[in-house]
Image (cartoon, rainbow, N blue to C red; front, top):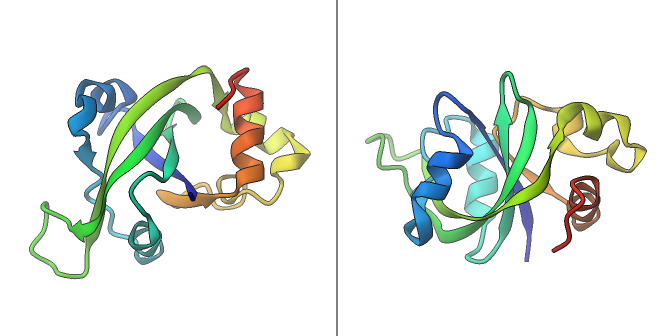
Length: 139
């Protein structure tokens, strides 16, 4: 299993909207960055990801699961762009802010800390466990 982080602006797609989709989930569409797209192409069904509210909140708020592997993005006819489908698994006990991540030396190499603009990014198992710990959560 691999771990990921999905970023979304609350005004575009929020955690509450993701939760409302239930087990059917939703396409993680609209990504127009090659690196982010390539990360989605590497995802497998059952991989887990953090759901991150960008912009004002800048916090990890929940856990999602990949339920469909990479396929053409339905929001464009451009064959270059793919997406995966994800469903909400559960909220974190307490949100983990970007500031908390930057302050924790265990997360110094995390993509979120060093390239916070990338909308889909990998998370190591160590980083995953650290974030869960910071949230007061367990897997």
